[in-house]
Structures are given as structure tokens and as C-alpha cells.
Image 1 (cartoon, rainbow, N blue to C red):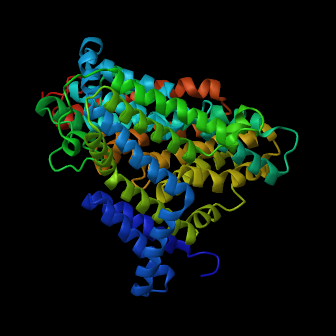
Image 2: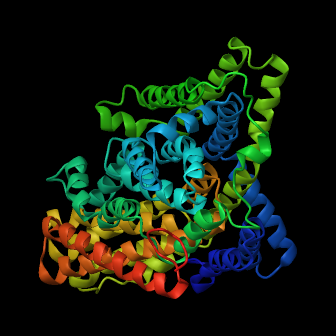
Image 3: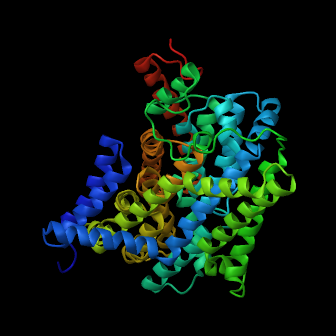
Length: 522
């Protein structure tokens, strides 16, 4: 169909997302979403829909970047397996009993580590998840809560510090400035001007801090935390954790649990991955240009491989395992990531379907060019949310919207500084949608490394993400209509988040009969 498929393009992601929540069967839901798109593209022919769907899945698997990330996940599973079997997790848990005395300190620790590991969102989820998964279980923190902490620090933090995200975003700002024919400002300066208006990311990270420091929860997260404390169940009955290390690998070898067997593989992962960023982008110029030219998938793959090799070397040199046991652990580690890898392939495939059907173009074209600037930031934010939620990709959303938002704002206002700052609004909407979408790879990874059921993670995170999004939207309205700058908007937003958090937690305490602080029945 020329010019896309119009409103029909909404159906594949809509069906997949609704079915995922209703059935709690992610794989079936994703495939049915892909198949729906296949039938539409094939003109209603179900056999053509099957052929298209299978071709799209194969294409997603064989894409060079995706294949590297799949291999990264599988090898990462082996690294996690060695940490577990060598007793590294158990040693860390024993150490943590003396250092981390409360649920609050565990939550705050995961939040702070999530901020510190800023250079890549995938590595962030892997490291923070591996460090705090067993600590969280020890402190009876639900996997839903840990996955929320992972997901809501990984991507937002990566948008502010030196990372592959920043390099990508600078490229998007440049694309928008080129389209608007803005030459009096560098792309890097344009990116810096967009940061203060990336309000969702700022508020999302701060809201995690509010949640873990106050110890108060609301919505389905309150129920999950109540279950973890009162019943000792960090996952609900009937849940399908994305990675259940204890079940898949059995008990760790308790010959000589050493905390170095936990940290050494992770340190190697970080060092080799950072080296990979530099090596694959070397010669590009300054640090930001190197990051922009780097190959994150290759860097991550090298880091995971080095992590697994470190595990094998430690297993053999300490004589905790023989070669046969080490190879069994390697293979069992691959099995840890099998379900997650299949879900990633399906998510990528569905994203490909929405691309073929030009869903994003349909949504964007619905704006029109006669929109008053006063409501433009709010509209850009909402469209970014919708596109990212439906497609499962924040980078894809940024690629589509940034070259539209900047020239549109420039056409309406003629103000360069104001126009480039609209990129921050795009980034905010894109990352919100990415957080809430069950077909987002970063959301899947948060579920993997926390050991959470994927749909449980999404359904408990959405009320928190929506709360932050509402505050962000209100701040964009104040920015447009009242002319308030970020230096005023951010403190106002923080106060509103605190008030909203206490109101909602109080409401759900009464509704569920659960004390939000102790998570016990009242």
C-alpha cells in the first residue's frame, strides 16, 4: 500500500501488547503480532502472512548487529553461570549480610550502582542485576522491584554521561539541525542544550531514589513487595522468571566460595567492553566522536567473552572444577538465556513489522505543521511515548522524531536555542515508551538480570513510569505556557513527585490493607 498502511499499522503492536498482558505469554503474543502484520502486508493471505512472519524472524536473527547481541546474551549467561557455580554469589551474599543490613540499603545500593555504571544500558542491567540479585533475595526484595530499579536507571543514566547513547543522540541532534539548516551551533552544543529538557529521564532516576529511600510503594508493586516480605516469595506463584539461576544451574559448588569469583569476571567485563568501545571507534577524533563511531554490539560481545573465559580460568586454576565440569557450566549458561534470546528475536521482528508498515510515519504525520508552539513540546513528548511503546525501540523513535521536532520548532519560532532543546523532549518520550513496552530489548534485559517474570516487571513498572511521565508532561506545559526554565521546572517536578508518591502510596495502603513502609497487612 503506497504511503504506508495507515491506521492498520497500529494493529500488530497493539495486538501483541494486549495479548501479552492478558495471556502473560510473551512469545505467543509477539508472534501473533508479527503474524497480524504479515497477513495485512500479504493482502489478507494467511499463507503469505506465515511466509512473511518467518522471513522477518530470520532477518532479525541474521542481522549483524542483532546476531552479536544474541551471542552477547548467550555468552553473558555463561559468565553468570560461572559466578554462581564457583560460589561468587554466595560469597557476596555472606559479605552483604554484614554490610547491607536492610531492604532500604539494598535498594539504595542498587540505585546508586545503576547511576555509577553509566556507559551502556545493557552492561548496566547486567552488572547491577548480577551484583544485587542475590542480595535482593536475601533482603526479600521482589524481582519486580529490582527489575524496576535496573530498567529505570540504565537508559536514563546513559543519556547524560559519557556513553554510546550520547554519541547516538548527538548524531540525531545534528540530523535535526541539518534539516533545519542551523549552522551557527555545533551538534554537541545542541545536545547540551537538550539535556535540561530531557525531563522524563531526570525525573525517572530521581523517582527511583524517592521510592527506595522512602520505602513506600503503590499499585501492583506494593502487592509484589508485600508478597516478598510476608510470604518470602520474591517471584509470584506461577511466574516464569526470565533467568532462574538456582533452578537452571543447581546449587553452587561450596568447596571454596570466594568473593573474587564474583567481582573478577565483572571487572573484566567492564574493562574489555570499554576497550571495545575505544578500539572499534579509534581514530574518529575526540571522545564523543570515538563513542559515535564505536560498535557497541561488538564491544559488549568482547566483554562477555572475556567474562566467560575469566570464569573458566578461575574454575580450572582454583581446581574447583575440572575441564568437563567447566564445559558443562558453559553450556548450562547458554541455556539460562535461551528464553530471553527468543523473546529478543521476536521483539526485533515485531519492530521490523512496524517499520515495514510505516507506523511511526503514520503517527508523526498526524501532527500536521499548523500546531501552535505552546503545545508542541507536550505533543512531541506524547508522540515519542506512543511510537516507542508501540515499536519497542527508543533509538528508532529518536531517529524518526528528532529530525522532525527540531526543524518544526525552528519553523514555528525561529529560535535556535529553543529549537535544538526539543531534542530533549524527544529523548524523554522515547525512553518512557521504551520503559513501558514489553517488546523493548532493554525492558527484556532488566527482566533477565533481575530474574523477574517479564510481564510482571512491565505491569509493576508502568504505574511508576506513568506517574513520572505525568509530572514531566505538566512541566512541559509550564515550560511552554508560563515560560519557566528547567532550573525552576526540575525542583517543582521533584516536589510534585514527592507529593504524588505519598498520596498514591497512602491510597493503595487503604485499598489493599497493606502498610506501604513495612509491606505488611494492616
